[in-house]
Image (tube, rainbow, N blue to C red):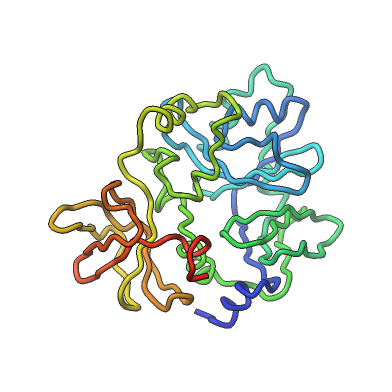
Length: 296
């Protein structure tokens, strides 16, 4: 890992991570806000021009069908997600678009997307636009550009650095922490911030609201810190005493902590900060995501 680039990101320098290839869509029309608010967990009506938010898309029973970022630009919404969700999530987002005055279009072949770290919006070509988005837990901006080839501002950041930052901020990823069995309230603080409990009805809202008001989830996503620089493999079972309480979903190294770290789903009894868990030869401590802890 290039530690110089990592620390330059933390210092607020403008550095770029290319998000393409990914699935990209645009939603237009007078009913775009009402329609999209009926499909995703977050409240897109609160987005100002040039802002973005994170959201989940669910079944009627509250299980996830995908996750995505939603950007407000002029009178349009621009949406992006991983390529593995391109077909299924695209079809799902079109499914209920029947009587609404809105148009949903796949623009993956027409646009490219990159993310520039740093609090200041970068200067970009006229064929581009930027939206503020803390998609990796740090200040940054997504840059949408018409045509192939992402806009690169400053140096280009490799994926291993972005993965370390993702883990440090306990941000779930589709295919690792998120799948079609996931209930959004299980997936940690980043996903909890992507759920509106005040905007009204959307697909899956009844189940998600009931979990908050009269029940609770049985597991939750946590950040674990190893006692050493090593980390357990994905799938490693976690023990609290002699009881199995969860399993590792992602793992890597934290340059900031100089320790091995992991994300894992654990039972609520094992989720309190400071709880010590055993994972084969590793001892792991439940820790707050680094954007909320003194480690920052």
